[in-house]
Image (cartoon, rainbow, N blue to C red):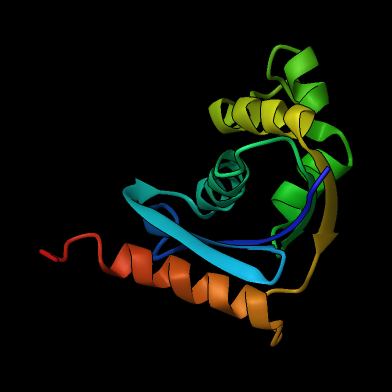
Length: 148
C-alpha cells in the first residue's frame, strides 16, 4: 500500500460566509495542490471538504498520513464521534442533530477505503504545509467572483 501525506485546511470570511479549502498531497517526492470554494458555507464544512476532496483524489486505497489544524476533523474521526453520530441516526450524545452529516458520511466512507493516520497541528503557527493550505483556501474564496 502506497503512503501518501495529505495536509488540509479550510477558511471562511465570516462564519457562515464565503469559504475555501486547500489541500497538499505528497507522494514519492511529488506534490499536488487542490483547492476550491463555496459562496455561502462554514469553516467546519470547508475543513471537512478539504479532507474529502484530498482523499477522493487518490486513485487507489492508500496509507494516508493526514495533517489538519481542525479539531473538528481530528476529534470527529480520531475519537470516533462521527461513527457514533451515524450509529445514533446523526444525533449527538445530547440528542441534538449532528451538523454536516452529509460530509461526515462521505468522510467515513473514505476512511474505510484508506488507512488514515491523523495528525493535528496548531493552525497559524508556522507549519509550512498548513500555511500553504491556508493560503490556498483563502485564495479560493477570494477568487469565487473572479471572471478568470
